[in-house]
Image (cartoon, rainbow over all chains, first blue to last red; front, side):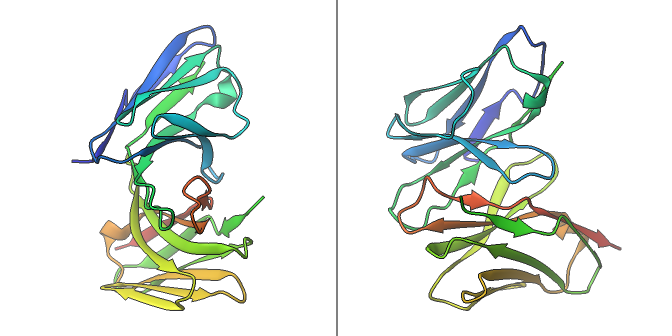
Length: 114
Length: 112
């Protein structure tokens, strides 16, 4: 059983829909991340939260809106997406030790935008 | 920005050794990682090496680091069909939990 749970596993949405991805970690970590995985491209870091505070936003379009109500939960709200946003969205968590940051990943949400 | 490069595909026969290579550009890289992604799953940390080391062995896995050439490799001895997966190289600077940079991943296919 993974310590990081993502729902839903699969999502198909139209360009005018609004949907949310959910991530929950049971590891007691203080940092949570959203990554985008597209075929043949490096993993793209989207957002980082540390102790619920957003510490990184890698020039992500505003149609992606993160929310971190507490250190265990992370959401990604989606609105008016484009077909090129279709990808696997991965959530991860880590314990910030100021050094060796081991990331623990969820299984991802496979998103298809029609 | 920092770059991490890997070849996209590697095919080996079961029982042979696999060597997956990675190059990176960030000279301040302190930790280098290998992650494994099986189909339908997220990434799982396999092993890591600190930049002041040049080799680390963990059972069938051997990590070699050439810091001068910024080259990292992962050797899997006696490769099994269960090793078929995508392997990601990643690097981070000291204190850089926000700055982990991943490669494209190398898809390892093990032929029975």
